[in-house]
Picture 1 (cartoon, rainbow, N blue to C red):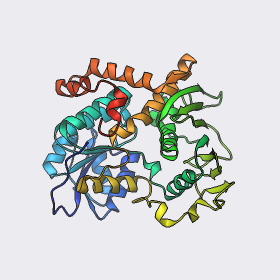
Picture 2: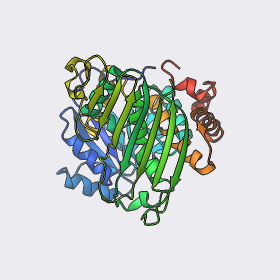
Picture 3: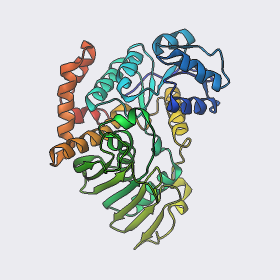
Length: 381
Protein backbone atom coordinates (compact mmCIF):
# COMPACT_ATOMS: atom_id res chain seq x y z
CA UNK A 1 0.00 0.00 0.00
CA UNK A 2 1.36 3.37 -0.99
CA UNK A 3 0.57 6.78 0.42
CA UNK A 4 1.03 10.38 -0.64
CA UNK A 5 4.46 11.92 -0.09
CA UNK A 6 5.53 15.52 0.25
CA UNK A 7 6.64 17.40 -2.85
CA UNK A 8 10.37 17.78 -3.42
CA UNK A 9 11.94 20.86 -1.88
CA UNK A 10 10.10 20.82 1.47
CA UNK A 11 12.83 21.77 3.95
CA UNK A 12 10.85 21.36 7.15
CA UNK A 13 7.67 19.38 7.70
CA UNK A 14 5.03 21.78 9.03
CA UNK A 15 2.82 20.22 11.72
CA UNK A 16 -0.13 21.11 13.91
CA UNK A 17 -0.34 19.38 17.30
CA UNK A 18 -3.86 18.51 18.49
CA UNK A 19 -4.16 18.28 22.27
CA UNK A 20 -2.30 20.57 24.66
CA UNK A 21 -2.40 18.43 27.81
CA UNK A 22 0.69 16.97 29.53
CA UNK A 23 1.44 14.47 26.74
CA UNK A 24 0.72 17.09 24.11
CA UNK A 25 3.32 19.33 25.73
CA UNK A 26 5.86 16.52 25.63
CA UNK A 27 5.25 16.28 21.90
CA UNK A 28 5.56 20.05 21.54
CA UNK A 29 9.01 19.94 23.16
CA UNK A 30 10.03 17.03 20.97
CA UNK A 31 8.93 18.85 17.83
CA UNK A 32 10.77 21.99 18.93
CA UNK A 33 13.97 19.93 19.24
CA UNK A 34 13.69 18.44 15.74
CA UNK A 35 15.38 20.62 13.14
CA UNK A 36 13.46 18.95 10.31
CA UNK A 37 10.02 19.79 11.72
CA UNK A 38 8.28 23.13 12.18
CA UNK A 39 5.45 23.61 14.66
CA UNK A 40 2.91 25.92 13.01
CA UNK A 41 -0.09 25.59 15.31
CA UNK A 42 -1.69 24.01 18.39
CA UNK A 43 -5.32 22.89 18.39
CA UNK A 44 -7.34 22.23 21.52
CA UNK A 45 -11.03 22.56 22.34
CA UNK A 46 -9.85 24.74 25.24
CA UNK A 47 -8.09 27.39 23.17
CA UNK A 48 -6.72 29.11 26.28
CA UNK A 49 -4.89 25.88 27.15
CA UNK A 50 -3.37 25.83 23.66
CA UNK A 51 -2.32 29.47 24.07
CA UNK A 52 -0.72 28.68 27.43
CA UNK A 53 1.18 25.73 25.94
CA UNK A 54 2.49 27.95 23.16
CA UNK A 55 3.63 30.55 25.67
CA UNK A 56 5.39 27.92 27.79
CA UNK A 57 7.23 26.83 24.66
CA UNK A 58 8.38 30.38 24.03
CA UNK A 59 6.02 30.70 21.07
CA UNK A 60 3.44 33.20 22.32
CA UNK A 61 1.28 34.25 19.41
CA UNK A 62 1.55 30.87 17.66
CA UNK A 63 -1.72 30.17 15.77
CA UNK A 64 -4.19 28.19 17.88
CA UNK A 65 -7.81 27.14 17.61
CA UNK A 66 -10.38 24.45 18.44
CA UNK A 67 -10.52 22.81 14.97
CA UNK A 68 -7.37 20.97 13.89
CA UNK A 69 -8.26 20.74 10.20
CA UNK A 70 -9.16 24.44 9.97
CA UNK A 71 -5.93 25.32 11.77
CA UNK A 72 -3.87 23.06 9.50
CA UNK A 73 -5.35 24.68 6.42
CA UNK A 74 -4.89 28.17 7.82
CA UNK A 75 -1.21 27.55 8.62
CA UNK A 76 -0.29 25.46 5.59
CA UNK A 77 0.54 22.43 7.72
CA UNK A 78 1.72 19.27 6.01
CA UNK A 79 0.56 16.95 8.81
CA UNK A 80 -1.28 16.67 12.12
CA UNK A 81 0.06 15.10 15.32
CA UNK A 82 -2.91 13.81 17.33
CA UNK A 83 -2.28 13.79 21.10
CA UNK A 84 -5.90 13.89 22.21
CA UNK A 85 -7.54 11.43 24.63
CA UNK A 86 -8.26 8.00 23.07
CA UNK A 87 -11.98 8.70 22.67
CA UNK A 88 -11.16 11.62 20.36
CA UNK A 89 -8.67 9.78 18.15
CA UNK A 90 -11.23 8.52 15.64
CA UNK A 91 -13.02 11.82 14.89
CA UNK A 92 -9.79 13.85 14.85
CA UNK A 93 -7.92 11.42 12.61
CA UNK A 94 -10.85 10.76 10.28
CA UNK A 95 -11.42 14.48 9.75
CA UNK A 96 -7.74 14.99 8.95
CA UNK A 97 -7.49 12.07 6.54
CA UNK A 98 -10.68 13.12 4.76
CA UNK A 99 -9.16 16.60 4.40
CA UNK A 100 -6.09 15.08 2.74
CA UNK A 101 -3.82 15.54 5.77
CA UNK A 102 -1.58 12.71 7.06
CA UNK A 103 -1.65 11.95 10.78
CA UNK A 104 0.83 10.77 13.40
CA UNK A 105 -1.26 9.67 16.38
CA UNK A 106 -0.55 8.72 19.95
CA UNK A 107 -1.45 5.14 20.85
CA UNK A 108 -3.95 3.60 20.84
CA UNK A 109 -4.89 4.26 17.23
CA UNK A 110 -8.47 4.69 18.43
CA UNK A 111 -10.62 3.76 21.40
CA UNK A 112 -11.63 0.42 19.85
CA UNK A 113 -10.46 -2.00 17.17
CA UNK A 114 -13.66 -1.22 15.23
CA UNK A 115 -12.78 2.47 15.12
CA UNK A 116 -9.21 1.60 14.16
CA UNK A 117 -10.43 -0.48 11.21
CA UNK A 118 -12.50 2.51 10.12
CA UNK A 119 -9.37 4.65 10.18
CA UNK A 120 -7.38 2.04 8.24
CA UNK A 121 -10.09 2.12 5.59
CA UNK A 122 -10.05 5.92 5.56
CA UNK A 123 -6.28 5.88 5.06
CA UNK A 124 -6.71 3.53 2.10
CA UNK A 125 -9.51 5.63 0.67
CA UNK A 126 -7.65 8.93 0.90
CA UNK A 127 -4.14 7.66 0.16
CA UNK A 128 -2.85 9.46 3.26
CA UNK A 129 -0.48 8.07 5.87
CA UNK A 130 -1.85 7.33 9.33
CA UNK A 131 0.93 6.15 11.63
CA UNK A 132 0.52 5.26 15.30
CA UNK A 133 3.34 6.20 17.65
CA UNK A 134 4.27 2.96 19.44
CA UNK A 135 7.14 4.86 21.01
CA UNK A 136 8.62 1.95 22.99
CA UNK A 137 9.84 0.39 19.74
CA UNK A 138 12.23 3.32 19.29
CA UNK A 139 14.85 2.05 21.71
CA UNK A 140 18.33 0.91 20.66
CA UNK A 141 18.48 -1.63 23.50
CA UNK A 142 15.22 -3.20 22.31
CA UNK A 143 16.51 -3.32 18.73
CA UNK A 144 19.70 -5.02 19.95
CA UNK A 145 17.65 -7.51 21.97
CA UNK A 146 15.59 -8.27 18.87
CA UNK A 147 18.73 -8.98 16.85
CA UNK A 148 20.07 -11.24 19.60
CA UNK A 149 16.75 -13.04 19.90
CA UNK A 150 16.88 -13.96 16.23
CA UNK A 151 20.30 -15.57 16.75
CA UNK A 152 18.82 -17.80 19.46
CA UNK A 153 16.52 -19.61 17.05
CA UNK A 154 12.91 -20.56 17.66
CA UNK A 155 11.25 -18.78 20.57
CA UNK A 156 9.58 -20.80 23.31
CA UNK A 157 8.39 -18.38 25.98
CA UNK A 158 8.69 -14.60 26.10
CA UNK A 159 7.65 -13.05 29.42
CA UNK A 160 7.54 -9.56 30.84
CA UNK A 161 6.96 -8.25 34.36
CA UNK A 162 5.61 -4.72 34.62
CA UNK A 163 5.10 -3.30 38.11
CA UNK A 164 4.69 0.44 38.70
CA UNK A 165 2.70 2.71 41.02
CA UNK A 166 1.97 5.95 39.15
CA UNK A 167 -0.66 8.40 40.36
CA UNK A 168 -1.81 10.17 37.21
CA UNK A 169 -5.17 11.61 38.10
CA UNK A 170 -7.45 12.42 35.19
CA UNK A 171 -9.00 9.97 32.74
CA UNK A 172 -6.75 7.01 33.57
CA UNK A 173 -8.09 6.87 37.13
CA UNK A 174 -11.62 6.38 35.78
CA UNK A 175 -10.91 3.92 32.95
CA UNK A 176 -12.42 0.45 33.21
CA UNK A 177 -9.13 -1.26 32.31
CA UNK A 178 -6.38 1.32 32.81
CA UNK A 179 -3.42 -1.07 32.80
CA UNK A 180 -4.45 -3.12 29.79
CA UNK A 181 -5.82 -0.32 27.64
CA UNK A 182 -3.46 2.54 28.42
CA UNK A 183 -0.18 0.77 29.21
CA UNK A 184 -0.04 -2.93 28.39
CA UNK A 185 -0.46 -2.14 24.69
CA UNK A 186 3.19 -1.02 24.84
CA UNK A 187 4.39 -4.40 26.07
CA UNK A 188 2.00 -6.27 23.77
CA UNK A 189 3.38 -4.34 20.80
CA UNK A 190 6.97 -4.86 21.97
CA UNK A 191 6.30 -8.61 22.13
CA UNK A 192 5.20 -8.58 18.49
CA UNK A 193 8.37 -6.67 17.65
CA UNK A 194 10.67 -9.04 19.57
CA UNK A 195 9.05 -12.25 18.32
CA UNK A 196 8.61 -11.03 14.73
CA UNK A 197 5.25 -12.76 14.81
CA UNK A 198 1.58 -12.05 15.36
CA UNK A 199 -0.79 -13.20 18.14
CA UNK A 200 -3.30 -16.03 17.80
CA UNK A 201 -5.17 -16.20 21.14
CA UNK A 202 -5.08 -15.16 24.80
CA UNK A 203 -6.22 -16.24 28.25
CA UNK A 204 -6.30 -13.31 30.69
CA UNK A 205 -7.19 -12.54 34.30
CA UNK A 206 -7.76 -8.89 35.23
CA UNK A 207 -8.33 -7.60 38.76
CA UNK A 208 -7.93 -4.63 41.09
CA UNK A 209 -5.95 -4.92 44.36
CA UNK A 210 -7.85 -3.79 47.45
CA UNK A 211 -5.54 -0.79 47.96
CA UNK A 212 -5.78 0.41 44.34
CA UNK A 213 -6.45 4.09 43.69
CA UNK A 214 -7.89 3.28 40.25
CA UNK A 215 -11.62 2.80 39.63
CA UNK A 216 -11.02 0.06 37.08
CA UNK A 217 -8.85 -3.06 37.17
CA UNK A 218 -5.22 -1.99 37.48
CA UNK A 219 -3.55 -5.42 37.46
CA UNK A 220 -3.56 -8.34 35.04
CA UNK A 221 -1.89 -11.53 33.87
CA UNK A 222 -2.24 -12.58 30.24
CA UNK A 223 -0.88 -15.58 28.33
CA UNK A 224 -0.84 -15.26 24.53
CA UNK A 225 -0.19 -17.87 21.89
CA UNK A 226 1.71 -16.54 18.87
CA UNK A 227 2.04 -17.82 15.33
CA UNK A 228 4.68 -20.55 15.29
CA UNK A 229 3.74 -21.77 18.76
CA UNK A 230 5.63 -19.30 20.96
CA UNK A 231 3.94 -18.05 24.14
CA UNK A 232 4.03 -14.52 25.53
CA UNK A 233 3.19 -14.00 29.20
CA UNK A 234 2.44 -10.55 30.63
CA UNK A 235 2.20 -9.95 34.39
CA UNK A 236 1.68 -6.43 35.62
CA UNK A 237 0.19 -3.90 38.00
CA UNK A 238 -0.16 -0.13 38.05
CA UNK A 239 -0.59 -0.03 41.83
CA UNK A 240 2.52 -1.93 42.92
CA UNK A 241 4.72 0.36 45.05
CA UNK A 242 8.28 -0.70 45.83
CA UNK A 243 10.96 -2.38 43.69
CA UNK A 244 9.31 -1.04 40.57
CA UNK A 245 10.33 -2.28 37.14
CA UNK A 246 11.37 -0.16 34.20
CA UNK A 247 8.57 1.52 32.25
CA UNK A 248 9.61 -0.87 29.48
CA UNK A 249 9.17 -3.86 31.80
CA UNK A 250 11.57 -6.64 32.73
CA UNK A 251 11.89 -9.25 29.96
CA UNK A 252 12.98 -12.89 29.57
CA UNK A 253 13.05 -14.86 26.33
CA UNK A 254 13.62 -18.61 26.39
CA UNK A 255 14.57 -19.92 22.93
CA UNK A 256 16.00 -23.13 21.45
CA UNK A 257 19.64 -22.01 21.73
CA UNK A 258 19.58 -19.97 24.92
CA UNK A 259 17.98 -17.25 27.01
CA UNK A 260 17.89 -13.47 26.69
CA UNK A 261 17.32 -11.13 29.65
CA UNK A 262 16.52 -7.41 29.45
CA UNK A 263 15.68 -5.24 32.44
CA UNK A 264 14.26 -2.51 30.21
CA UNK A 265 16.88 0.10 31.12
CA UNK A 266 20.26 -1.45 30.36
CA UNK A 267 21.70 -3.56 27.53
CA UNK A 268 20.25 -7.05 27.39
CA UNK A 269 22.35 -10.14 28.05
CA UNK A 270 22.34 -13.53 26.36
CA UNK A 271 23.20 -16.95 27.81
CA UNK A 272 23.54 -19.16 24.73
CA UNK A 273 24.37 -22.83 24.42
CA UNK A 274 25.88 -22.75 20.93
CA UNK A 275 27.63 -20.63 18.27
CA UNK A 276 29.55 -18.51 20.77
CA UNK A 277 26.61 -16.19 21.27
CA UNK A 278 27.04 -15.77 25.02
CA UNK A 279 27.72 -12.05 24.68
CA UNK A 280 25.71 -9.01 25.69
CA UNK A 281 23.33 -8.16 22.86
CA UNK A 282 25.07 -4.82 22.54
CA UNK A 283 28.07 -6.69 21.16
CA UNK A 284 26.19 -7.99 18.14
CA UNK A 285 27.80 -6.63 14.99
CA UNK A 286 26.71 -3.06 14.40
CA UNK A 287 25.49 -3.89 10.89
CA UNK A 288 23.03 -6.42 12.37
CA UNK A 289 21.34 -3.96 14.72
CA UNK A 290 19.35 -1.11 13.16
CA UNK A 291 19.74 2.16 15.04
CA UNK A 292 16.49 3.89 15.92
CA UNK A 293 16.01 7.32 14.29
CA UNK A 294 15.52 8.74 17.80
CA UNK A 295 14.47 7.67 21.28
CA UNK A 296 10.79 7.25 22.13
CA UNK A 297 8.43 9.77 20.58
CA UNK A 298 11.40 11.53 18.92
CA UNK A 299 11.97 8.32 16.98
CA UNK A 300 8.30 8.10 16.02
CA UNK A 301 8.38 11.68 14.77
CA UNK A 302 11.53 11.13 12.71
CA UNK A 303 10.20 7.96 11.09
CA UNK A 304 6.88 9.64 10.30
CA UNK A 305 8.48 12.62 8.61
CA UNK A 306 10.95 10.38 6.75
CA UNK A 307 8.02 8.31 5.47
CA UNK A 308 6.27 11.47 4.24
CA UNK A 309 9.41 12.44 2.34
CA UNK A 310 10.31 9.06 0.86
CA UNK A 311 7.23 6.84 0.90
CA UNK A 312 9.10 4.23 2.98
CA UNK A 313 6.81 1.99 5.03
CA UNK A 314 7.05 3.09 8.70
CA UNK A 315 6.65 0.96 11.82
CA UNK A 316 3.26 1.66 13.31
CA UNK A 317 1.37 2.33 10.11
CA UNK A 318 -2.26 1.81 11.13
CA UNK A 319 -2.68 -1.50 9.27
CA UNK A 320 0.38 -2.94 11.03
CA UNK A 321 -0.69 -1.57 14.40
CA UNK A 322 -4.25 -2.93 14.55
CA UNK A 323 -3.14 -6.27 15.99
CA UNK A 324 -1.53 -4.61 19.02
CA UNK A 325 -4.87 -3.06 20.00
CA UNK A 326 -6.64 -6.32 19.14
CA UNK A 327 -4.42 -8.02 21.74
CA UNK A 328 -5.73 -5.56 24.33
CA UNK A 329 -9.39 -6.12 23.45
CA UNK A 330 -8.92 -9.88 23.35
CA UNK A 331 -7.30 -9.81 26.79
CA UNK A 332 -10.13 -7.71 28.24
CA UNK A 333 -12.80 -9.98 26.73
CA UNK A 334 -10.99 -13.06 28.05
CA UNK A 335 -10.90 -11.57 31.54
CA UNK A 336 -14.60 -10.67 31.44
CA UNK A 337 -15.79 -14.04 30.14
CA UNK A 338 -13.20 -16.32 31.74
CA UNK A 339 -12.24 -18.08 28.49
CA UNK A 340 -9.58 -18.18 25.81
CA UNK A 341 -10.26 -15.62 23.08
CA UNK A 342 -8.81 -15.70 19.58
CA UNK A 343 -7.53 -12.58 17.88
CA UNK A 344 -9.54 -13.43 14.75
CA UNK A 345 -12.71 -13.39 16.88
CA UNK A 346 -11.92 -9.80 17.87
CA UNK A 347 -11.02 -8.77 14.33
CA UNK A 348 -14.15 -10.18 12.72
CA UNK A 349 -16.50 -8.87 15.41
CA UNK A 350 -14.85 -5.47 15.17
CA UNK A 351 -15.20 -5.41 11.39
CA UNK A 352 -18.90 -6.25 11.71
CA UNK A 353 -19.32 -3.43 14.24
CA UNK A 354 -17.38 -0.99 12.10
CA UNK A 355 -19.55 -1.77 9.07
CA UNK A 356 -22.73 -1.37 11.12
CA UNK A 357 -21.89 2.02 12.61
CA UNK A 358 -19.80 3.66 9.88
CA UNK A 359 -21.40 6.92 8.74
CA UNK A 360 -19.03 7.60 5.85
CA UNK A 361 -20.38 5.55 2.93
CA UNK A 362 -17.07 5.53 1.05
CA UNK A 363 -15.15 4.33 4.10
CA UNK A 364 -17.79 1.63 4.62
CA UNK A 365 -17.39 0.50 1.02
CA UNK A 366 -13.64 0.03 1.53
CA UNK A 367 -14.22 -2.15 4.60
CA UNK A 368 -16.97 -4.12 2.84
CA UNK A 369 -14.49 -5.02 0.13
CA UNK A 370 -11.94 -6.50 2.52
CA UNK A 371 -13.52 -9.92 2.97
CA UNK A 372 -11.70 -10.47 6.28
CA UNK A 373 -10.13 -8.05 8.71
CA UNK A 374 -6.90 -10.03 9.10
CA UNK A 375 -6.51 -10.34 5.33
CA UNK A 376 -6.86 -6.57 4.94
CA UNK A 377 -4.07 -6.00 7.47
CA UNK A 378 -1.49 -8.07 5.60
CA UNK A 379 1.07 -6.32 3.36
CA UNK A 380 -0.60 -5.92 0.03
CA UNK A 381 -3.96 -6.91 1.56
